[in-house]
Image (cartoon, rainbow, N blue to C red; front, side):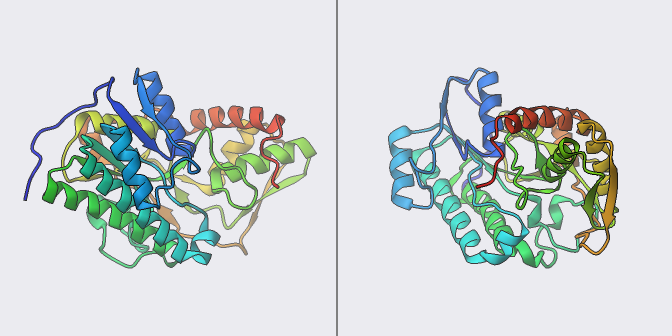
Length: 325
């Protein structure tokens, strides 16, 4: 067994591959890397490189020889997609993870960061959720396949570190939002969905906007730019086998969130709750004390982050970029 005992920060002139650069997280990472002076950022579209194919992945790593890798590529979706296509979700995510982690090891990558999700934790979990609660109970059934794939990726990073002396880090973010988010009417998550609902209600002068459930569930939100900052912080300041929750550490009820978005969008109608619709888990917040002890703190408060996201959304919406096919 090999244990990696030293910590190695990022060389700003090194070649860094961001897998999944077009997504919410990947695009933010590319913006941050560019802003911090990284000169050799490698990106590939799915058409150019299918990471579920082992031969393509190995060939890419041997040809490009990245020194650093951030694995933000994944098959993702909402509750309906996760529950309807579980075989696709576990297969594709396991294939991506296995192919990238092993090719990174075989090609001599210096450091890798793997992005998971807070859905890895048990459905009935003590709050706030600490990293040590992993595998302490049953998973949420509707996204079990995705969660199992992400748990496997986290464990694979740890096992490669132990056996091969690699320098792989795992990060588990809470609910994310921000620039490049998904605002689809049917498949978006709650925060971007509410932004679009209130914006379109304002444009149409609708008398009310309906929010599902009782409005009482508490949720934690993190701006994706804070996540990107945390990822680069860990790549610069940590090597080891711990994995990290990354969140804001703050909670807000769904009704309070709706009221904030109503104010930010300038909608003047009423908010109507529909208690016949499900609330989901009543509380879900991560404990971020582990990464705080290293010196990282989130820097974007929720209202500021939503205002930035809404401004970006309005610009794209006016150009017709959110018209569903």
